Length: 322
Image (cartoon, rainbow, N blue to C red; front, top):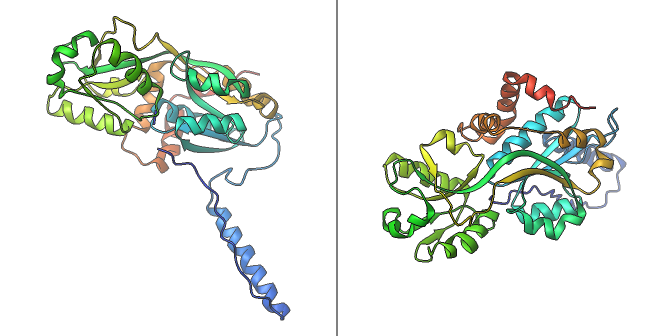
């Protein structure tokens, strides 16, 4: 749910003055080659697109797109990056907002995303791009959209929120404006529960979590848009508000969605991903180790490797299918 950090490959053209001397020409060529070599050494794995095929028939290079701010997506993506790189793949992760991510999957610029919520949250994208995508199945069936408040708040249901709006500063704290949950809250929850008098504040998932943390530290009431599974349920004393009108929709599944040719390009890895399953407790554990640890993104691969070593039987099971 959530600021576009897509990588761009920029090449600055060099303007060369014609040289009459062979030595100067050779020197320029050598310098250009050395510069290119130095640049390529700094690029992440798969940046230029690793070529070749692995012994299992899969392409060597895989490009995974990760939704900005979706912590379960970050966790699943870094887990699979670790698992696949142990098998000899080159895996590149690129962060993106949701809409361009599906566009990139449909065009084949990306290979896979691990965080499509169905049947509700991402229905619009699947309706638009589904014919050019492959659904590799659900890996978590315990997903749900929620409005959450601190455990000490006096209300327990969304239908109580209107009468207590002033306790919550007349605000509902949301996430990214383009997020699927944002649309559900604005188009379903707010009108059905008569919450038009409250400000629906949207910005980003990190901002929402910061607001939640700060409010709890001051023991103030706050209502936020949240979803399960999420590490916040382990980190903060919070509760979900009941939704008697069903405005947030029924529980959902988290699916792995890939480009249309995924099974041709990655016959083995696509089978592994089709069999992928991760319960919420295991996911919370990895999310907490990564996004709730205060670590820098550059540290995520090492953290994932450590987590994998502590959950080796589970990690081995991800590629045990033939």
